Image (cartoon, rainbow, N blue to C red; front, side, top):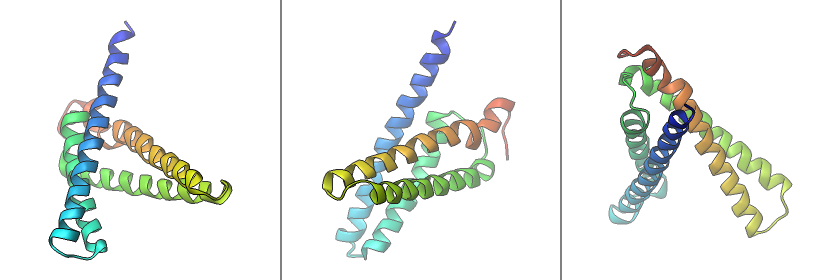
Length: 143
């Protein structure tokens, strides 16, 4: 009986990973297009890339990954809060590890990877158990 929940979790993780890959590629494409194609500042380009990434990530996580019936007005603010929290954790892990690891490029890469992993795992858990959980468990559409 345990195979179904395990395969369901694996499916969620695979879909979440695919969304992350698509989102990263699309966000980078927007950043590069805006900065180099439209000659905008890197700040404007990054804001555009992250804005598109946020919208696409929310839509794909809501519909494709978690198959949530939660309305945008219910899940949207939660997703925004989850992303903001994850970004804060990302920065805290990054800065914390850079403070304790020895200097050097390899240590900086390791810190960055750990920070990214923290962001990804935390966003998955928050999305599954908080952002998109209410409508899934109640079975109805949330406004």
